[in-house]
Length: 234
Image (cartoon, rainbow, N blue to C red; front, side, top):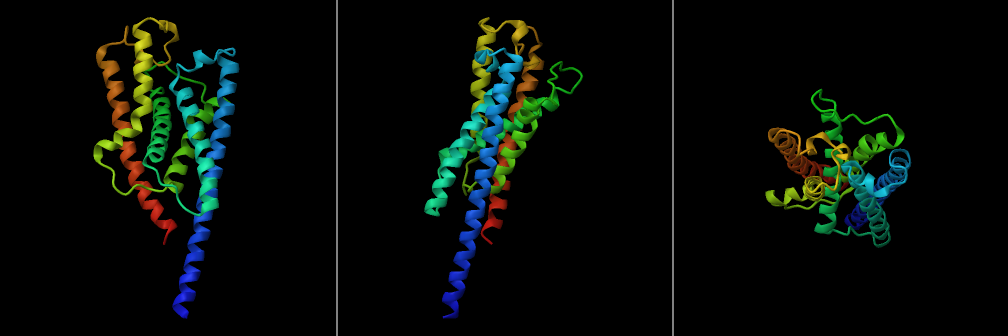
């Protein structure tokens, strides 16, 4: 009788934790989505005079919109999980979120790189939309993934490169457009993408730094996500 009572209490305790976890995920994701969409429109109005396509040459914009869409999807899924009281575990969804968190981290790293004296890029980080896209959204995305994402137990080392898919697609498209002359020299978004004028070592070094960071960030986030998730079920 005592064992049954303890088991029921333990199950109720786990259910409460599950609810808290999903509610926290909804708060994180909804905040990211709202800030991301608002910041995108503010940047379009202030910087591009309503030229939406011109704004997409920036990795920050592409990453912010991608993260906002993933966050909206997460809100919907979290609501379903609260209704059914079950985790919806999907490798595809997990890697979407991993791509999002790695991309947002790289965006912040690029901003830190822009502080180096040999890189002329220096966005106004204190402006509302810029501060959100470069600092607030990346931090919330990282916290959301680490604290609330259900982990995948076994991931092969090569699979950790899934976190760099959006960066790869962006690089291929933008560099192709630069080489073909579709993006003028004065409109190239980042100095390390100036493949026509910069030394090869400069472009290669920037690429190696970014991809190395993407891989090790993926590895770190996956492992920390596993460790932190254990605390929800103790």
